[in-house]
Image 1 (cartoon, rainbow, N blue to C red):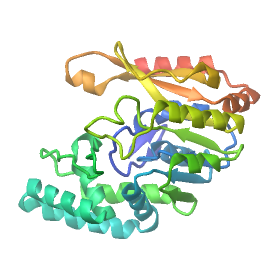
Image 2 (cartoon, one colour):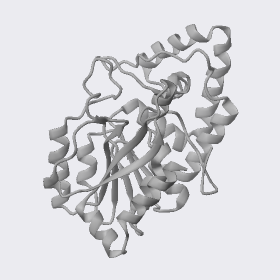
Image 3 (cartoon, rainbow, N blue to C red):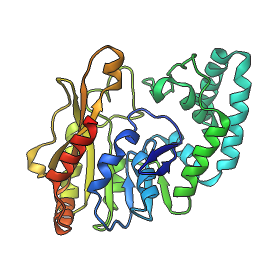
Image 4 (cartoon, rainbow, N blue to C red):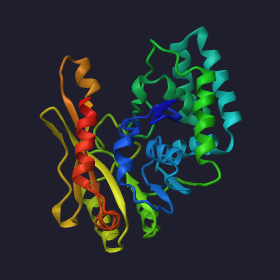
Length: 308
């Protein structure tokens, strides 16, 4: 488990685009009172897990259009013992021929969508880098240098997450619009949608894409309803910018979250810093202003922390 300010944070599975590494930079922009934290593009739900560990809210809503992923989440929260037992069986069976076994389980998963199959695949692929074919088939290969998370460790992680979220979390696998339409003024919506420029490529990193204009239109509606939300959407690595900024007409507070060196760039011999964009909605800024929050001070603290 990852430790954040002496709190052990469980991590259920590696997943492409997870905000596990920067959750600590996002939490300072939570208002002091949140009825329900809503993640319409939850993935590995890294922000909700850390928020639960910190006691920042008591209710959660996890949603993702990827139905097999949400079935896995249901097993994590409702049947952790059975899930980790099934995972352990798969993990032990792979020793005969781990490469062949991985492809067999991948084929079975694409046919049946069994949650423990998905958990095993996520544990075996390179850096949780999920890929789907144009037909929606899971098509990523395994990192054959590793066997995936050991069963004992997986059990600790899964039970840790289940303890934090079970009994107070709503799960769904619907279009994000349906979820955000039900957000109340006392809620907080955290959105980490598919990043620009990679959602509609041949090698799909996400189960479903989302167009820039489509997303902006929904944000405008949320503004009109005074919904508090935070968005992770674009950013920079070195001198390269990923995607265009969200439009000024939305009146969002745009912050740069300095997260340190890019691990991918470091592997390639470069010393590039990663800067993530964080956007706060007008309603959220108003709530935080009422609590006399200092955005510039928070940003400076993050910058200094990243340099350590």
